[in-house]
Image 1: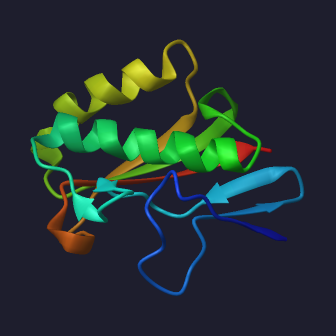
Image 2: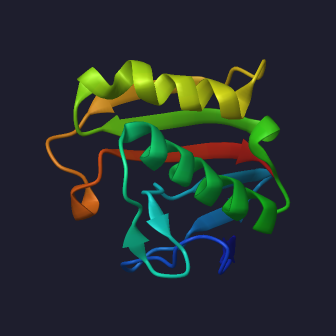
Amino acid sequence: MEAIQTDQAPLAIGPYSQAIKTNGFVFLSGQIPLVPETMQVIEGDIQAQTDRVFANIAAVLVAAGSSLDRVVKTTVFLADMNDFTAMNEIYARYFGDHRPARSTVQAARLPRDVRVEIEVIALA
């Protein structure tokens, strides 16, 4: 197993890795809308937060030698399921015609009270 670390995405805020690369897969920890340089939550609505999350995900995938077009599974955690449609617009923009498997759940509370957290599994 190889731990993946890049300063192009937020540093882990706990005892975990940004991602683990093993057996041809990359398992990303959940990404929240933190700006890597400041480690502060980006200001804005669910779409701004989702956009920042995907920028963070893309950076970790690149560091692992992968990319968004190699994602096989996503899990989306929303603070409010009423944000689903707005989040989904940004989600679709990042994946285009690529359609990974996905689960979406409403969480009672997310780290730093953000509106969205997304984790992915990708081919290495």
